[in-house]
Image (tube, rainbow, N blue to C red):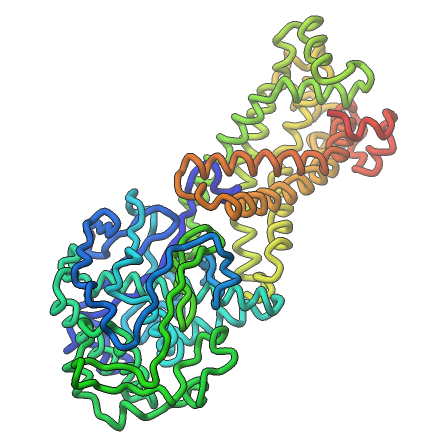
Length: 618
């Protein structure tokens, strides 16, 4: 969770699903034909939030009993799958393919009210749609890894098939590769593996919903599953059959199914010459597997592999035999994944952050203002002691001595000096800084920078966005912070005036400057807030990532995820407070002065006669 969503979960992940069409009569007779009679496979949701059918009925596969009876004959297929190995503690790097968590922010996000068509959403074969995970409170459905209605190898090879033959999928994948181009070679390959695994997962989940039917009624019937695969093969053939090599690759794809699920009748009707014809794919035109087959997910099976019909088994098989292995591994997020012959299959579908609309910015502002005001109000006594230590160094022996002395000499209420200014100032700070950070991070990353540069410099973008957000927050915080410091440092003068009275006094101290005198501490406060905000946001995000990478199970429940936010917030707050402390000391000195205009941070540092020790007073 990011700082902008740590108080209220207002930015949800979107996930993609592949929508097919049941009515073959209306399926893709031309590329520009309007699509009719849609029958969506599913809408898959991510981030532990929901799984919802587009038709409006909630559908949670994980909550339904899955009849595995049709899978008993799974091992009779000539192209044997290895038994599924449960995810173990072995590193995914020791597996053949690198699998990782669902890719985030895969598509550019615009603020336009009409979303631009994304390449992957413009699949020629059906459409890909993003579903809002906030629309349901149920946990996401999961395809039981033991229920091989849609085998992992089938899903990953179909993903490769679409990357080569579908223009939308191909365009999306090229954009993905381009966005990773400035990364180190190893990291780029790792990112590509994550994207492909999540992309294949979206396909598998969509296919599972389509093949299993409403309420998973098809699972208990070989014939129903076979009929759905027949319809699927017909649709794919009608759409891609005219492309060189597509028929052969489709035949290879459906020959990977268990014999009881193969659409035999449709496969037998395919022209024999078309079934053996190779196309333009680099992998197809090779005699053997390319050395980079396991890294280049656009490569298809070499031309020596052909589909043969066996009269004895009444099924299609691939010759020469191919080992369609499936090895259970763990992703970086701790979620189970499967490494297959054709690439990784993640347990998480593609995801992206939702578009930031005005209502979301409002929620960020409200939650940020409430959270900041609450937390700063709780630590007002500590802030009073800190300010006294900065304005009068040597007066107290430490924080506890200072608190006890103030309470004894001035009364317990003295520990609450500046409460009005604190609540007003940090309400403004929260209202302004969190929406601003979210806006600047998106705007810089998606509108100003090329995708490849943004991906390679994510930390730099976070620092700049945090700095810009802090500049905006400082404009409103400076006058109020000056009043707070005056009330704490000189309570005998300003306590009775209140916030508004103190603003008037400071604004009238210098007749030439007038109200500008309220901004005497702007340079030092802005310096403090820029350092504090930049480090805070970056440290929070990185600390959260580290914690979740070590204990990924903490993502599963809202309570534990909020706990991680609390710990990461404490770490980032402590770090940012330390690095911004010198500027904070200068700010206190400048704001304490009765008049004289802005000294600036350098001038304030020189004028502060308390010495270096005061710069690190707590």
